[in-house]
Image (cartoon, rainbow, N blue to C red):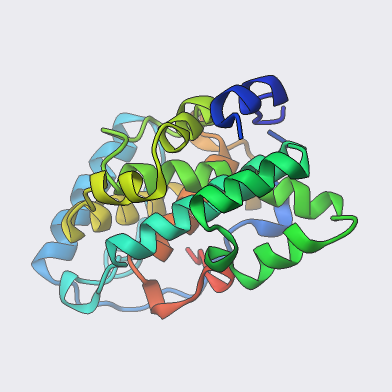
Length: 251
């Protein structure tokens, strides 16, 4: 089921989903014997309590699968997150098949071209984008949802069992100029971002573990939504200092 707005709605907003492919799923990596800090232990306990409340299995090794400690993380700046949100919005809109003239107006309004990653530029400039490029671009609405949450435009993240409300998310941006969108944004704290990053790490681990055992995602989660959240949150916390196209989602 495609996660789309509809051309009529897009035109009104600016006036100017497909199933998640398995080849983008997270890959498990060997465990380590980590000496966790108190903050890491508390964050893990909080995430595992959430998992258990939703009947989601938790990782059994108490000495592995920890999100980096606060002292090891430097989160993205507000401007970086704003730019990424605008790029993701544009990419999602293009995946809907919005006519080029309207995309050009959006680009002019939000100066999108300079905000795109190399892979995104390849997609938007391709004369005939591949079906996989279109699918990947459409899924980026879920990453946009995370950026809007990180910038304070969305109060809380819902349980990941269904796709985000695309029209609602796009409207947040379309109602503002670029300057207004940037000025009104309030980047969440490192603690809030790390809490969500730790939780999504465990949710994605549970999805990957289920898939390797030929089982559906536990807790009725949508594995595609979980994957995209994991991707976006790892970028937000600047995990391993990876650029957008290179973000890893190891579990």
